[in-house]
Length: 153
Image (cartoon, rainbow, N blue to C red):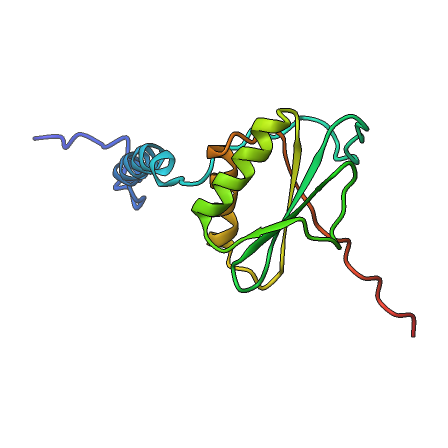
């Protein structure tokens, strides 16, 4: 008489997840390779310190460039940060670059601050900063205003 061998293991009712893990790892590699290619922007080297007020150097000239909501530029050159007065203005980017390059050529260590109207086009502000760089500006800062305190009830 034939003896049927006994099975040590019965039928398994488990799902085999190995193929799913393989697919997941392939997708992970694809995302890791493509993610760095999607990043675009302007290269900035930010300081590794807490934000503090910039020290004022009395010997340095300060150029305060303002961008209006309509996209025009005006600035003030003086020994202190002044956002009220206007020394000169420019309607287009080429005029801005030429006039600021002349100021930088006369005073090489000029500190430039940029302030823009909240309604000003971001592209126009970025183009202005790029023209400042082409004009020889190396010391650049951005001016913002602190938000208003909410009124007490």
